Each structure stands twice: as structure tokens, then as C-alpha cells.
Image 1 (cartoon, helix red, strand yellow):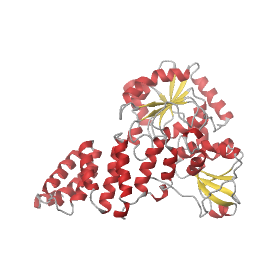
Image 2: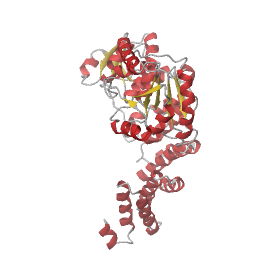
Image 3: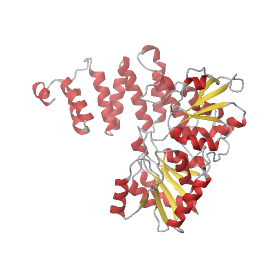
Image 4: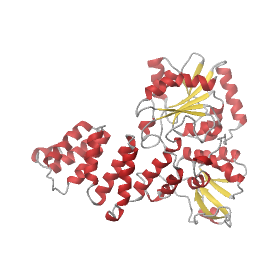
Length: 448
């Protein structure tokens, strides 16, 4: 690459390619300089200019150059074909992340309006972004209507897995000839969240056969004994097709039962941990730390993007939660050994990891552990959903930008899904300091 630059230093294509390579290597400042050189060398009528605008706009967004990113993506969005479509999508994403929601909505609505002029674009992409904005704002009727296009979106936007086994979609649940096959389309946390409507489905007398991730199976079977629940892993289509006449994604069941905010009612705990396991863990912790409050912590997410915006620094979180009469307990999934060692070395704080509990294993023992604690403090991840669903007291720390997932909604300090969680929101994007400053008082409140 360097040789190419030496041979053709005034060739914008060489500078463009160099900038892309530098970006992938993580050298963002060098990449920005190279792409700026490429832009300066590219004539206004060059066919490669829209693609250069798009790449430079993506780099500007990644490196925090917001104004430059909006200008470059705006320029690229005026081009036709796939480049113009992709640039408009990324411009809408950026405006959403900056909290400029009206501008983001206008950008994406314009993209939908120009659909006939740009057959190269996937209309599900702007529809899904508009759906997520509407859902976050609490406009559930519009959000659910747009969200129905989600299975047409590319995997880069939504990671969805279909388990419909070729059955027709259920339109009239009560009048279906056989059982309705209901299946999750996203991860463990979403399955737990959306299971909040299952008690209502049972009360309505709907005949449902529920597909469930194996990790959640024992907890779900105990919690919903009236339902026929099977593990998804290794399930053969014939086992479903012979018993069920129609199918429905679990998210669509939520849309049926929670069509607007008024349909939520008063939340309740709906997952039931094993009481024997809860008592055993509580007795073990009582013996180890008599008279101490037990506070569980989780600080990062395994979700793809935007996990970096959801995560909080462990040391800052532990310092905010720690008092002499508390024991801090590690609820974080994944290997946390190095982080716990650094916390002890640098701050003198111990974060206990229970060797009998695997947060990446079955959810049942994780739920029992949380039920044995005095409170859970977590970001938006699976730990938040488990704590909320079992009715554990807890604090959920939420970002203010596009790291905010729609089901926490844009406002409010109590979630509509869970009875004993409180939401601590960033006042501005990236401002965890204000959240952590408020955390000690909020934690005293829920553990008093």
C-alpha cells in the first residue's frame, strides 16, 4: 500500500484505499487524513465521489466528527442507487444517536418517499429505524406496524432467527384450528422480556405451544405450568407441524397484547426461581457475610452494537455501590477475572464471583442467585431482564443516545414491564458520571 502511494501520490483512488485500510487497522486519525486528501484530489464529476463521501462520512461518525459526518453522509445520500440509500440510512442513524429525532425521522421518511426512484434500496431498513424511534417514543401502534417489516431487514441491522417451520401466520388466535406455535426471534434477554405477556395469553385461553431457548427452559416451565413449552435446540419441524396449525413470533404476540401504552397495566413478577435453590444460596451467603447487604453488579453487554454505549466502567460502578456494610457480587457473564483482580489491586474493592453459578449457563440458577440478593445494579442486558422478571429490586443504568433500547422508552424512571426496577438515565449522551453520582442514594432507597 505504501508503495502504491509512493508511485501514485496524487491518485485519489490510492488515498481512498489507504484510508479504508487505516480505518480497519484502527488508525482513525491517519485514515481521516488520507480520506481528506482523496476528497481534495477528486473532481466534482468523478463517479467515485459518492462512495468516497460515504466512506469518509462513516469514518467521521466513528471518530466523533459529527458535523463532518452529517455533511458527508448528506452529500452521499443525494446519489442514486445503493450508495445513496446506504448513506441516507447512516445519516438517519447518526441523527438518532445525536438525539435529533425529528431530523432523523424526516431523513428516513424522505427515503421511503423516494422508494420508487431507488429500487436498489431495502425499504425495510428505514422502516425499522422509524419503528424503533416510534416504539422508543411510546407510539406503539405506529411502531408495531412498521416493525412488522423486520424480517426483510438485512442481518447487519437486526439479528433475527426464524423458527416458523413453514406454518401460516396466525391472524385469529382464538379461532385457530390447532395450537399456535410461538417462538422467539432474538436472544435470551428479549425472550425473558416478551414472556411478560404469557400470563395474559393463558388467561385469554389461547392454546399456545411455546418454543424456548434451552437456557430458559426449566425456569419457564416452572413459571408457566399451563403452557406446553419445548426447547428450540434440536427441535424437528414434524414435532410442531403435527400439533400446531399456525405460528407467531413472540414479538408479534407482544404487539397483540400490548398494542399501546394503556394495555400494560400494573407490572408483576412472572418468572419463579426454584425456592429450594434460593433458600440454599441465601443460607450460604448469610453464613459467609452475616449482616451484610448483598448487591449484584453487571456492567457490560455481549450485544453487538451499540454495546460500548451501554457499558459502564466497573471501577466507577463498584465505588458508587460499595459501603462497609455491603458485599459486591459479580453477576457479569463472561470471564471477569482480570477485571476483578484490577478492582482489588487498584481500588481495594472485592467483587465476589460465586463459582457455583455460571451466568452463561442455565438461567434458573442465575435467577435463584439474584433472588437471594438485596439488590441488583446493572446496565441494560440479560441481568436486567432476569432481575426484573423475578421481581428483584434493582437499578438499571441507561444511556441517552442510540444505545437506549426501545423497550425502556424515552422517559420515566420505572419500566412498564417489571415491578421493582428503577431506571437511572444519562442526562446527556455519555454522561455516566451523573448517573453514578445519583446511584448511592437510589441504592439506599431500594434496600432500606
